[in-house]
Image (tube, rainbow, N blue to C red; front, side, top):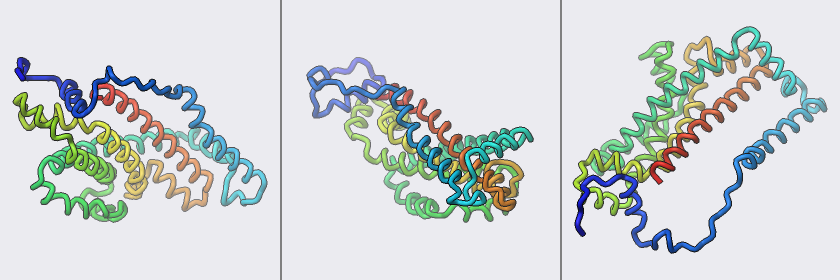
Length: 285
């Protein structure tokens, strides 16, 4: 086989690798599947929240559960309006989102870097994987005293804790996916005289884009989980602080409000990451 272009594009190599042992796309006579429309998906996704809201309203209106245990949806809305009018809800949501995004970005970069090293090197895997696996099992609250001791009560300790939570899902998925990259892709890249760095950035990482995106989505969810623990570190703002303060004051309506706000923000951030997923998959698939 004669080679005239020594720098093939990654998409070409990925297409080349995906055609090993399979017939060409032109010979596939199976009918195309009909994907559900986006409007239909949105409607279907809203069914369960509406059912939960209806059940919540019905139970609270019936008086089966006392209001100090289950506030009505109207009471939660009133609590949100009150906090908004006092200029608290918006800043609380904004500072929590900022902490999550910063920690998620830092943790994802570290996880991607370490996962690439461990996934591509058997020696690195033997050295680092057992220790990282042990640290991955440490609960989030166990890091709080150490971070307070080293970094104090400022933003650094909170963002660091969120970054710890984000790092492990990205590391795990990237390292595992790179170990199972099709060796034919790597051989084709070497035939085109790619360096190790070019093999990683132009062939190996693009080949595991779905796994990377899955790791990022898990990391984002983990970041929101670690946020509440992070905001236990001497916070005076944030949704985690609102949860703790409301617990102390017995304001269960505000507890429900904080939980619902966290759920909405988590879903919105996941949807934004879904847009990145669509771009990456269209770019590299």
